[in-house]
Length: 212
Ligand SMILES: [Zn+2]
Image (cartoon, rainbow, N blue to C red; front, top):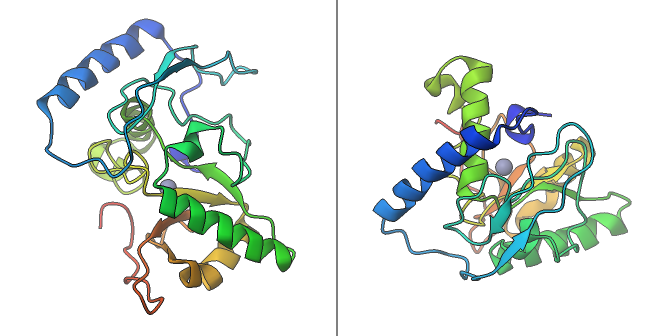
């Protein structure tokens, strides 16, 4: 389990509100990026999650511009079926990425391997929280950036990345994913896949980490 998958355990509503405010300003400044995922103007309330690692219940806004701090959060050790599309972690993914992951899961299952989703779409606020946690864990912004992308560049925020587990499933997908368009991107993240194989099923060269 990496730092990116481990939300801060002691959430503080006041601090999170400040982060949220900063992110709102940031989002308003805009980066001119055209969203790849359809904006869905809905708002749901995250039910209080069980256990001490639950973040505070928070109004969850869906879509690439969402700034809440819990969108895409999954309890530690929890994995989703790739077909659990009621969860925004999957419903806010690029539909072609989701379909590819589901096709891969069917093929893997036929070979006795279960593919589970450990992360998919994340709100900007949640990604910021993961990044902030990584800065604390690794001691510097530069080091943290090797393990966790900032919200501005995270493919998870754009709905264009999916994390798969357990390790057996990662190994299967690294070996077989390209026939579904799915590629490992970072050498230090065997679980992270994006839909970037070319028409011939070739994946781009591995990057050493999220910073490289
Ligand atoms: Zn990832």
